Each structure stands twice: as C-alpha cells, then as structure tokens.
Length: 507
Image 1 (cartoon, rainbow, N blue to C red):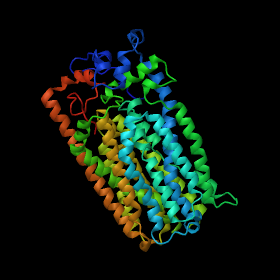
Image 2 (cartoon, rainbow, N blue to C red):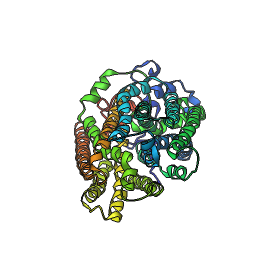
Image 3 (cartoon, helix red, strand yellow):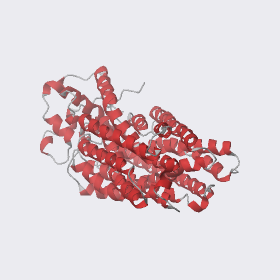
Image 4 (cartoon, rainbow, N blue to C red):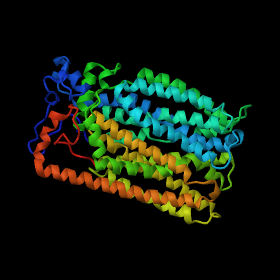
C-alpha cells in the first residue's frame, strides 16, 4: 500500500501542517502568478473547504480518478503505440509489395512519421497551453483516426509518406498532453506507476487480423479496423476527459477540492493559460533540461529502429508472417511487466528513479552485444536476446515522470515536455536509419548502433541525477531543512522550480 502523504506535508522540524488555504494568496483571483487551481479555491464556498479531508475520502477520490482518467489516457496511448508498431506488421502482410516500396523507402516511411512529429512538437506545446487540453487532445485523436483510414487506401510511397507525415504531426500531442494531465491528477509518488500503466505496448490485434480471409489485403484491413475504433474512441475522450480537476463535470465541488488538495505537495501547480517567456528562457538555460533531452534521444534510437524493423528482423530468422506477428506479442508484455516492476520499486525507495534507470539499462546493453556478436545460425539465442532487449522501454517510461515532477511553472513545464518529446522524436527518426537495406538480413551495424545509444543514455541520466542531488544539497545548506514548511505558500503559484526555494528535485 502506498504511503498516504498527499493531504498534509509536515515540516521535518516542527511537524506542523500547512493548510491548503495558506497556499493561496488572498488576492489569488487577481494575481498573474497563480494558476487555475488557485482561482478556483479562492472562489470556493468556505463550507466545502472547512471540513477536514479524511484519508478514506481522499482514497475514494483517487479511486475515482484511477477508474476514469487513467483508462482514458491508457487506451489513447495504446492506440498511438499500435499505430507506430503496426507499420512493421503491415510490411510483412504485403504493404511493401502493394505500395511498391524499394531500397530504403521503408526506412523513410518509418522516419517520416517522426519528421511530422518533430515539426509540430513546438506548436503542439504552445496549443496545449493556450487551448482546453482535453478538447485539443480529442481533436487530434480524431484526426489521426481518419488518417489511419486513409492509410488503407495508399498505393505508393508518396501517398504513404504523406499520410504518415501528417499523422506524426497529430500524434505529437499525445505524450506531452499525457504528461500535463498526469501532473494535474496524481501526486509525485503516484505518477511513476500510473505512467507505467498508460505507457504500454500491444501487438495481439495484428495477429488476429493477420488470420482473416477477406478480399482486402490484411495490412489494409489492419488500418481500417484500428482507424474505425480510433474514431469511436475520440468521441469517448471528448465526452469524459476534463481539461483539469477544476473543469471536471463528473466531480462535485468537494471532490474537485480534494483532487487539488491531494496534489498540493507536488509544488508544481495545475494550469495557467498565460505564456511566461522568462520561464521558457529559464528552461532553455537549465543544463538538466539538455541532459534529459540527450537521454530521451539516445534511449529512443533503439525504439525507432525496432518499432519499424521488428517484424522484418524476426521474419529474417525464417519465420512466417503470422508466426512473426505472434512472436512479437511477448515483447509488449515483457516491456509492460518490467516497467510496472521498476515503477513499484521506485515508489518504495526515495530518490531512486535515475539509479533504477541506469542499472536496468545494463540489461538491453548486454542484449545489444549478443544480437551484434551471436552467430546468425543461433536462432534461439538471437530471439531470446531480441525479446529481453525490449526491457529498454521500461527505463524510458520511468524517465518520463522526471520532467513532470522536477519542473514547476506552467510555461516552463510545457517547454520542458516539448524538448523532452522533441528529443524522443529525433531518436525515433535516427532509429530506422541504423537499419539499412544493405545490412539485411543480419543488421550487425544496427545492433552496434543500439549498443552505443544505450551507453550514452546511461551516462546522461547519471549526470542528471548528480545535478539534481547537488542542487538539493545546495538548497538545504542555504535554507536549512526547516524551510520545507514554506512549501505551502508556493504550491499553487505559477512560479518555477528555481523560484520556489522550498522545491526539491526528485532523482
């Protein structure tokens, strides 16, 4: 059971409670440095806030959030992940033949998606801050759903590349929006496990559709089925996902109050629609920003390569298309189970996230060496190394909670998310290019590239942890540990983590 530390945050020296009301200046509704939560609380009927929130009442609200918000984010992320993975399965179901792809064109079909993602990541971050998050999110899901349907009608490389490019632009919204929503609804200690749930992979749909017998080629049917379901899901998302706890129609004012009270300890605020350019500048000048970006890029180069070429790599070992797809199912299961295990472990041990990320990356590093050096005749060993290499996904999933937990100020938070996922995008663009047609079917150079990327990722996340630890120690020395009692005065101010002297980084 998780420790309940969301309703009160005692000072290490005094044990006194800091009330939620003390976190809000009296003129909060008229200030420019507070977010929507402060404005909501300033106007709330005192009868709602006067009664103490019991642990049972808080857990009931958390349960409600987990049953509604978490599935909405999870299914959306699965659909986005399946859309990326499905291009690999479509290749072995006849897409490369039907669309007359030659040479490295298939590599570019994989990469061009992320060029769209890259170009739109900045505008997406801006729009996420300026527009109602859930409405914008739902609209982009509907857009990529329609494009999935269009993919089924493509006849050549130009059509396929165009659709994938625009789809990448729309899917650039998913992860940043998920990150912002996660910060709004869950505490720092709850976030890693929730992120592990919504950041998972799936492949069984491909196998089921691959077994069908219709006039349509299986790869076209694949996109039609997923596109049709995504259209329906966009409608569900629009109906049930609120823009923030303040705008949640299926919660009472008391439940909204408890939702906000729960996340006070995050010290990162909820939402502010005004863009503050000094926060953007602060983010760009922070070395921690670029170490996280380097990690995100390096960790996702293997992702870009495997997502695009996974099915081709496995079929190259001599398996049929259907067996290849079936053999791909355990990779998603393995990645999901491993990320859940790591997430639970980090909740139990304070400031252990970066250590778990670095150490767990030793596993895919070893697998990359095996895939690079094992003889091609040893199918069992190669397949085992290929499977276990998918543990690379868990460290990345764990890392996505760091930009959320360690960034305060809404403009800075949005900027940090944009940079982090831009780096994700760059890694996924480079990834397919590490597997060149001239290296097929062994792809030895590709595996050597994966090895180098994992090593860089270990280095960057270790350096990030050391910077966070050093900054925490510096603040402790300058202010003394008793300064944590000041946390309440800043919780719902739209100030950055550097401005909030009580802020402590998680690593």
